[in-house]
Amino acid sequence: MTSVIRAAGAVLWRDGSVAVVHRPRYDDWSLPKGKVDPGETVPAAAVREVLEETGHRVVLGRYLCQVSYRAFGKPKVVDYFSAKAVAGTFVPNDEVDELRWVPFADAPALVTRDEDRSVLAAFAAAPPDSATLLLVRHAKAGKRDNWPGDDNLRPLSSAGWRQAAGLRAMLPLWGPSRVHSAPRVRCVETVQGVAEDLGVGVLLEPRLSEEGYWPDREAGLVRLLEIADGAGTPVVCSQGGVIPDVVSTLADLGGLSLPAAQAKKGSAWLLAFRRPEPGWSTSDSHTSWPRLVSAHYFPTSLPVPTP
Image (cartoon, rainbow, N blue to C red; front, side, top):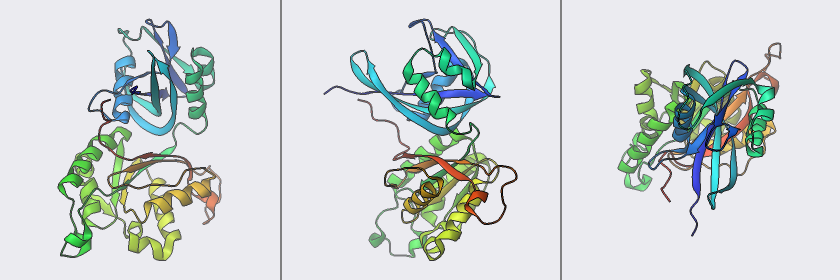
């Protein structure tokens, strides 16, 4: 059986320009990318590869696309993200000897491969500074039937704490600033570590619990959009009976075609929104709220298995 080479990269951007790198080994111009290391998640690989090739530290934004081709006789898949440069300076290295910052519109003409042009097209399909929100389902908490007490107080299992540790490592790659959670112990525990690392509390969201959401779905959706429209990038932890409906409904409202939304325990959705334009109505019409422009599902926050 032929193993698949997993890789990750990003469209590195700042101030209306994207970074295109020259690789002397191939004598080509490309977007920064590289193989996922053993014990590493795909988003972490994208951040590391950008730093190694360009010298820039980044905050990830929306998911762009996956590119597939053959390399060294094996199938290769590369996942790409938008990545905002926040610090750093390029220094020529063994992999990259030149970096050019070029206007968004000029980058497709500079890159060598059509695959990179398709990634740039995905990047150009929405504003680079789209608002992002990380919607997490709580980690594993054992079986409800085996918990003798109030189900609201059911804590994470040992497997759930491992999932929470994975989320604690992965979610900061998007530079979150706020943490929200349905008021269930298992939900709060799932994201408590992220909040502790940020030095903030977990804000409780009754509208995003299963019993708070379904009696008034519209109020729950409005609350999530209010969170998305705030400053910074929020993390929101909810339940399996809420997340698929939220994602599917927001996709329908935004005219976004998605497969059936999933929500495994310990999984996360990366949602990106176009904020309302200045001058739009502030009434409770659909146009006055952020509009979903992309949604990407991470079934796990644990590292990619090594082939």
